[in-house]
Length: 225
Length: 298
Image (cartoon, rainbow over all chains, first blue to last red; front, side, top):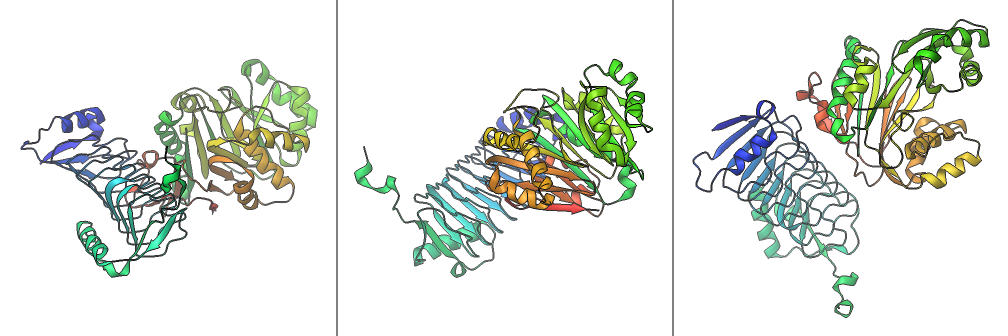
């Protein structure tokens, strides 16, 4: 295992070092100490490595991730795993606003609560939150899955497209064009897999599914140019 | 973008270090607001005395005889403690309004930063580390304090555009965000006789709170009504004689992190600002909810 002291060696060196890891690197496990809420830790990774961040991070940790596993042993600031393409990001604590925003793929696991706008404009990422999510989560979500083991805040799934939302607790309010949908066997199967990947011991049968009613302007063929 | 820091001490043993802790937090927030910085600090209360913190661009000349001239004008003893461009005028508590009025004739160019029994506000244009050094903030002690680093978006980079703003006796406001209805609200408040000095949006927010409280609202009520009367983005932190409060607009896109231990309650725009506080590893750390007024009091 390689240990990198962010306080001593700085952010650019950290990210450059991690970027320099080839797909077939032998240095597969990294530990980052003294993150102290710094911005942009472990962004733009593209190798099957594991990065363990020992503490809380600031803005945009693990953004644009490909292949790598980034494990934050603390809480994450705004925009964690933003635009992730593949790989896994795990947050042991809470995540601030817009976690997993615009993510195209991969898995984001938040073991605490996520703040507002979790999964905003998600495009294929799977997000599993052990706690609650804040208002406007999954706003304009296009694809992928958002699993919330706790409660969801106001305006869940506003203007949603094809993403699936699974919530175990209460939903304060649904956003425009977001409705509760039937939980069919295929959804139970998808959710069972997601809960397992997220390390949740919740039962899939306890969740409700929400998705798009497809009633907004952009869903009407007559409005197409 | 701006940076806010706040520290409310529960443990009296930390009071001598308040300025040093706030200075460290403030400097960490430099890249959120490098153009100006300010701090409101709540220090000792002396029975029967009050403080006017004033600022002058020509401090050496203006402050030389100010205490004596003001003392003569109000017929009482006034002492002056200078810190760079600012000075704290110590006046009898029952004559603070009189002293403030007299300042307009004794030294019309002097600007009042704050008035109250314990509050002192220092703010200037420049990097937070330079501003903190000019006023020797790190040597200050007190019960609680609020700091702000400014990246101007709505008005000019000037001393009077910097935060905190004094909203009433021993009260102050700092703001991260931008108010979009400040022009119409400024006109409304001015029609009601409220004095507003600059084109700054936050000054209007501060004047709004002052105006609401002058009309009978408590600070809590004024903050509640700000959620419907102010349009735009805001995270506000307010200081009062015995505590501080936090409120975020309903959208809450301006960041806010709180930390609480047995020794303190701390606020930072980012977690980075809090990392050097004692015992932060075991603190309860959370984000304040949108459209919710929080208060901590001694």
